[in-house]
Image (tube, rainbow, N blue to C red; front, side):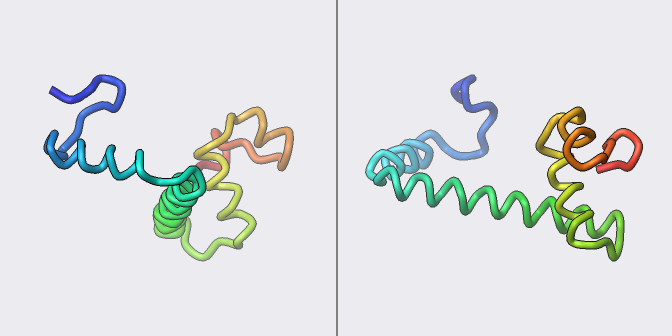
Length: 89
């Protein structure tokens, strides 16, 4: 059974242990770089899905729709006047 803190995993315990050991050997800078790379990947996947659903939208609208996936509705309304419940994600 996987660790409940990390959720279900399709990675074998042996490989997961190797990954964890690899992360432990990384410097703080390397870990931050890894997180930033993962965030860029998640944003790229979100952008692809948004473009597929909404077609040829402006870069500004794309950034707002990505923000709508990440930030509270009230913040988007207050900061850019975008209500995700009305405009969508």
